[in-house]
Image 1 (tube, helix red, strand yellow):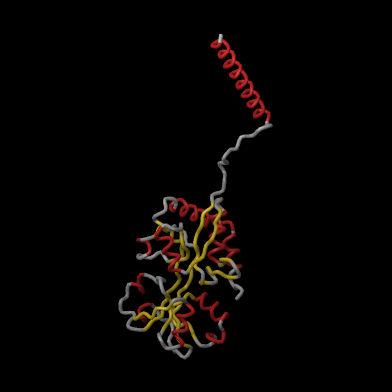
Image 2 (cartoon, one colour; image 1 turned 90 degrees about the vertical axis):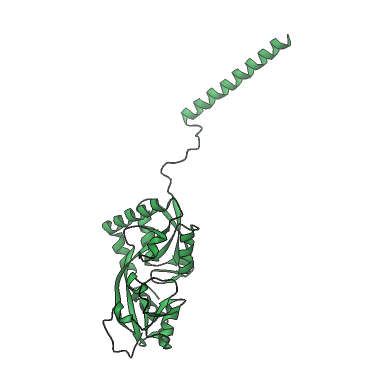
Length: 271
């Protein structure tokens, strides 16, 4: 008798569960209930680190990271449905974070023989920029190139690379400064004969510190135009994917005119 009642009870529970399941499936079909679904077209979000003091390319200014490189990278990734969040750090730390795998990538850097060994690079440059050779305003020299730096005291910025030709020349007597502005200050203090600084960075520093630099330094040569890139971490498995996506995005915005608009915006940046 007890076994019979248990069988009835089990049968009743089964019918009850089955009826609830049928009602649930009917509700789904009618659209009353919707199951959570992971969207296949969800936009991935990545984080990149930009240098904090390299305006107008990348600098922490007015409470956020901004500059030509920041806008180009953001637009390029948006063109391939990737959202970018930005962090900021001094250049040496920025590159260390990427090299160690703590961050996905750091910008901006040359793709030279030193860095290509420790970072993964995309193919399409973010932008081109000229590295100027600067001297004090009373210099009469002009049209100098890398060979003119041999056996001369040359100001460089800590952690920067300047091309294989310059970085591999052991005859250059380097005067290392922590920042570009310190590099130029050492030049005026006769700590160096020349300073190597990107020309647009110098233009900005002169406008920001006119009392220090205006009419006191002059460009006497060039290391020519250089391609600048994001240095991706070789320790992050997703680096190749997002390097390739950056290339695709850069090609898109160069073709559709967005790249040219960003360049125009930053042609005369606010001090």
